[in-house]
Length: 188
Image 1: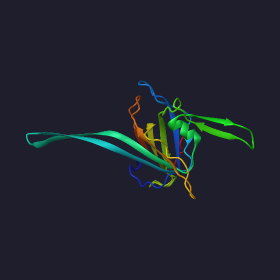
Image 2: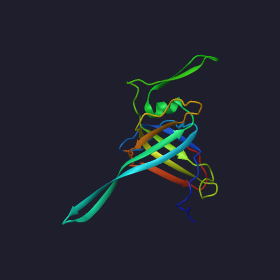
Image 3: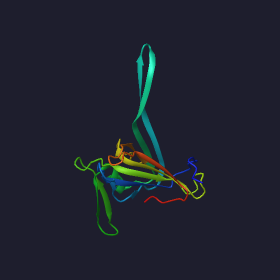
């Protein structure tokens, strides 16, 4: 019997960003090493539909609609310098020795490249209707659509977040994939 094609979705366990290094018209996309989004809190996908209506003879004759945008909004509990490089650009420099080590992310006009990236999120095991299963949501080609929310909060934790817009891959046209697994699988 095939797996049912519907499920509840409860929680998010993990999310990873992979830099998109190549998207050839003929071939397959190539991604860099996956980077953990630490302390993932939310992964919300939304979209816009453009609707065109044809009118004539004083009546509605036809309606066509198309997806004009898919967007993701992500919030996470910890700031990752590697995630900032993957979604915004810049470079991280490590220096020093214990007890004076430093990791510094620098962004300049020349290094703010806004590189394309893939984002994959997954529920915990058993957070779907299938016992032992999970759900993965992949946005294959994203570009940051606003500067990430960073900073500090008085007497509280500061939650980092970002939004990005999806484009279809040149190689295969994919924007988004949702996979319901009978057996939970880690993000690779």
